[in-house]
Length: 301
Image 1 (cartoon, rainbow, N blue to C red):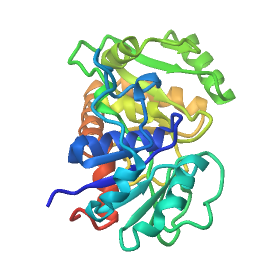
Image 2 (cartoon, rainbow, N blue to C red):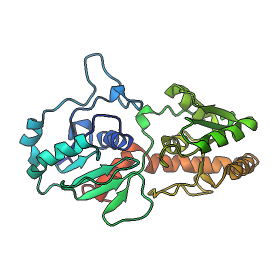
Image 3 (cartoon, one colour):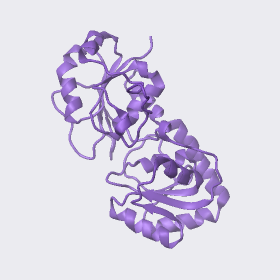
């Protein structure tokens, strides 16, 4: 029998939740992922689905009474957020799912685990060390909103980001002084941002409010070499320094790494290609969905 999932959502944008939701739809088919409460993704920055003229997208609103009537049909429940709305729904209905495996997602920069609810597996966006029965679940590249293209890579180095932390401002100034392409604080349309990555040989990723940031995943997906500061968080199947990405420890080290890479175009191209291959195999929304279901024992590993 096909796998059927009940996915409990929070009403506002939640990157980890929304990426996994996207991946489950891609992996299983949206008809096998029951979303409650209905979540309209057309209003979010990462709009995974176009809104058709006739109404909401491929996800159809479903009533709670309908979910309870078919509770025996679900193979697993995913509580997509520790935010109060998703947790409250699960607390209300959890007794109807006594044997079903349940995943609880923690995609926030702060906040503890909610009490008084049942779960069998926990997944957290930013983990710094291994903990029993807790699995790292970082962000990923959402292919549906990406615009990869095989173009001439005529931009040596690019850095596109919001100035949310000082290190981004410092590095942007250093890169700008070297004549590299920098957009700091510019709210670029998504197609223009993707166009820059498609043309970049190297693209820089720096932490934002959190360590995990979409840029880390978008850059290699588009085939640019990922040049990133070293991240202290746990990432399954992470990029490897010098093989599928290049990591630096300081702004000065960043410039040194850029100089060395541009001086060796064959090595640069080799690392970028390996990063893109790893990105598309292990770091898309679909790959995240498979990872979660494998850890839950729903799909074979």
